[in-house]
Length: 366
Figure 1: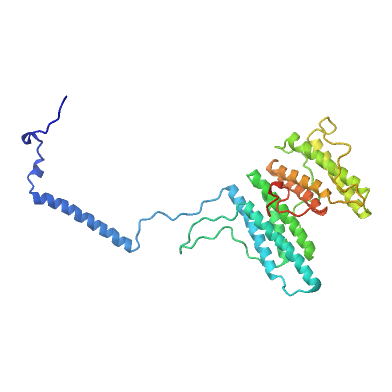
Figure 2: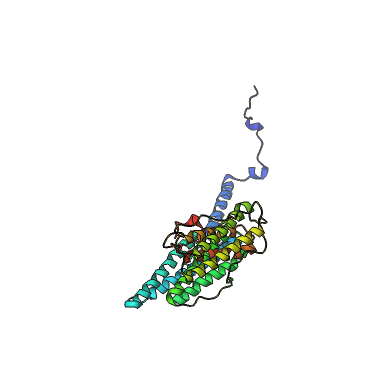
């Protein structure tokens, strides 16, 4: 085995001549001088640091939201504004009202509290306000965004704020990139509009006009993204069944109710026909319409009980909320209008108001 041995001192490589000729104290002096220079540099850094001159990375900044997040924050802004408006109006209600005035105040308070409860659920469903976790120059956490706008107390102002929020959501549906968020926004908008209608009716306030049509209409062409078998055939049958139920009802109620029932029956029958033509099943073997349908409980009772009719309208509201997420963006407002119409009719026939119309999976929220 090969072994490595130290070379004799005479055979070791010699130091460079310049270094070899330096006295030992000079070589030690070079090392000491280098240390002194390093110590001096460290002292300068310490002085500069003490004077406020620091080598730091830039402070963190808030990220720029993408289109979906920007739309979400806009929806959240409307919700927090509605919430602040309702809260301010409740706080301004008279505490010493008596008699009829007291009863009117209590009705208004109940409606405003329902708006607050809805807003809490809406804010949670939309993801809440954005909290960056960053600090301002004084080390105080930045507030959650968006912050609510200033609110002037008043039931009319609350009605105005609710309708404004509905109108903004209706206008934003066509540009929302996320289908699920669009469906949620549509549901929130419908809840806000119907709360505005109820509050205005209770307080004698004026309901502002919107861009929504007086009567919701089925589109002129078959919407892209809609599945005929899964979506339209059940919808056609549901619309036709609702029309049949109202026709039967119209023969068993008072004259005033008869006019309303016949009008509603005609609307449902017309929508069933329009959807059947768009799906190209009108009069074919695929046409799901029947001669007669099972009726809601109470329609044939004596006396007539109309409370079961709201289930038909609630089911249609669910169908149209689903279509909001499935049709092309430019047709979402048409589905919103049909959702609004169906949910409003459900309330007319006795349905309990909910925070998320057309979204049965959120029935426990709000």
